[in-house]
Image 1 (spheres, rainbow, N blue to C red):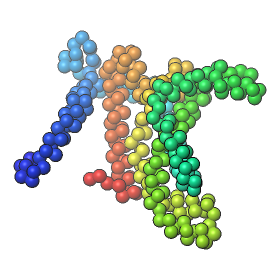
Image 2: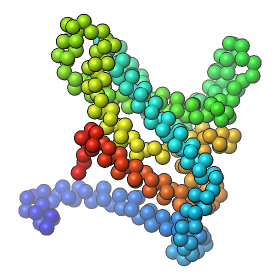
Image 3: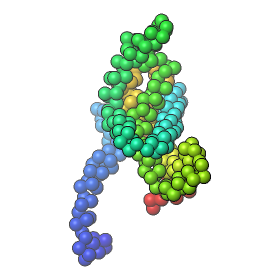
Length: 301
């Protein structure tokens, strides 16, 4: 019926344009989902997925009764939530301050500089960080100048590893994340600022009573939508900075799945953990969408 209507209206070629996208979605997203069967099997690579015996929820029972799984979940939540909080507060503050700059050339220069780290891969950044934070790196040389006798192994310390993960992630992304808030600030009526200036308001008062309330809806929307990523602590970053010494504080769900699946060749357990993460993330997406609809009026359907 739809094809007939589109053909009569002469717009059937729009449907044909969807074919490549649907094909890619089917090949790379739908077909691989059959691999989730391994989460319910005692998978044997020699027998393959279709002939390995089913064991029900035994793999999930092992995951939930394993202390390592809860430690990994705890690390994931702490790192992900810390990134979400600081990853929102810093871009908002940066956008509010940059919005007060009146020299456009300087403003554009700062914007361009802070965007650049977003386009660097974690492989490059991890290599730079390992050199800077090593025992003979710039940071330890500076600390020794201040009187610190023993070098600090930042990437080998369970105290410093999480703050470094959060700090470097915020540094990499805050410039790019501020784009949305800067765009929201441009939609505020300039007459509000002019009226505030005539009343003698300071810049801080204009930020507090005009700029911040003007972007509140955007902040609420992005905050609620970010809930869906509460179990995504950043595989690329952690994998490139991770080492066995910081496993108690730095091991997250994604690195745990990688280690169990590819290093220990325990495919069924890795699939069970991955499926558990996907199921929780799906629930969080629904919750985030409901909250965004209720508090920010954001709806897709």
